[in-house]
Image 1 (cartoon, rainbow, N blue to C red):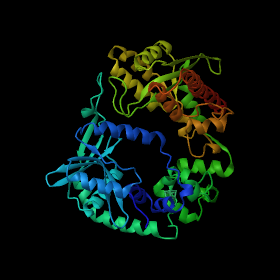
Image 2: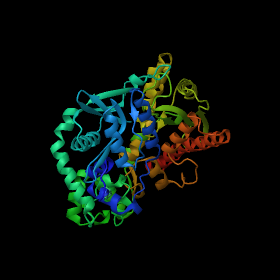
Image 3: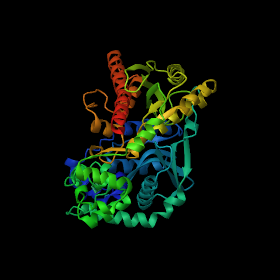
Image 4: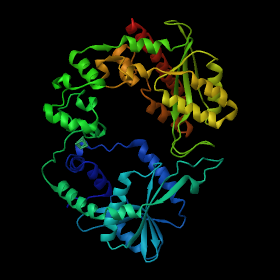
Amino acid sequence: MMKLSKSDYVLGCSCPKALWLKKHRKDLYKNDSGNFIENGYDIQNLACQLYPEGIMINAEPWEVSKGAKETQKLSREKSILFEAVAELPCGAFCRADILQKSGQGWNLIEIKSTNSIHPEHIDDLAFQHFVFSKAGYQIKKHFILHLNKDYVRGRNLDISSLFKTEDVTLQVLHKQTETAAQFAQLYDIQNQKQEPCVFVNKNCLNCEFYAYCGKNIPEYSILNVFRADKIKKIYEQNGSYEVEKLDLKKYDGTNAIDIQAWQNKEIIIDKQGIRDFLQKLVYPLYYLDYETVMPAIPLFEGSRPYQQIPFQFSLHIQKKQGGECKHTSFLHKQKTDPRRALAEFLIQSCGKKGSIIVYNANFEKSRNKELAEMFPDLAENIHAVNDRIVDELIPFRSRFLYHYLQQSSASIKKVLPAFTSLSYDELDIHNGNEAMEGYLDFIEGNLTLKEEQNLFQALETYCGQDTYAMVLLMDVLYKYSK
Ligand code: SF4
């Protein structure tokens, strides 16, 4: 008999084929959730401190029957159980983060490391209600205990304010008929011999089984070009995921540009659009890029859960069009709040005039607004920096300049290799997530002195390349404007 856990159920709700592949093709299933799981465990341990009388069920994750028996035994004696287990004869089982005595019955409390409630959290609790109820527990209420996005850390962490408890009983009970039917369906699917057939859509690009399900789909396909709600119809019309098979005449706007460029393997240029963008620039240009961390549990006084904390910037300064650049940078090398020092050095480095070039302005502007709120005495100067920002993403996202190798993306990681030979492949840090993870390791004291030095070097190189890339892309824009 094949078991069906809570995570199987939630996975099956998102895609039945993913559940089947997890059960029948273990060779394809890596479940590499990395830091997220670690993060989740930290948060779970903190949340459990809110219930000091709680008792942990003593069973390993794979010891389901032992955990269920232990839960039954302790439920007669205790009022709060952590990792409580219920199991049904058909093989369905689940673990509740917290089972809390409530009169003659019990409440289910699910701990989530998010800032808000997501729809799959309700599926998760609906499945717990289904299994615990059938196993003989009278379930009264259902709660989600998640991080409170409005909590601002003081000198010390206040766990009772860090979390927010929301009663989702109505939503969970509302789902019970659906959950029973869904359970029966997923139970049959996981036990069937034949692989289920599911249409591969845009969401599949983020699925760990995509390499398998999408093995016959080209690297660049209609999944990249269109919105998810259009893809199935377009596939049915063409019988193919290939962009080559599309009838260009049927499409307009950005879609038409992307399709035309790919089919003809060409670069599409709107000279006037590029010129209009370039005319807005005021020299000297300051090419700016931030690196940030966003710890789930706020590390610094005055910060919130998952707040983006800038710890580094790179700045290339160019006095005239196509001229040499001067480079300066900031990297906070202490395990303290980097924001004040970063803001002061930014103001000092950006001078009083000239455009500040960023790639995706919303990000840098939002960080600056947060810095201005945090340090009112610097606010005027920080707002003055924001007023000078020009977004280099615009000419690429607006398709004033579009290379077929961009494959429907205006991300700098796609635009850069399309137009230049500069690459991130040889660097020790390849993207913002790796920079973030490395810096969090440093702040949390997980690195040796030597590793710290290597990290600082790698961060300087990576962030410096991001702004140098913007310098090269400005040259590209000038070249194609002529
Ligand atoms: S790639 Fe798509 S169809 Fe395949 S398992 Fe994942 S979500 Fe389901």
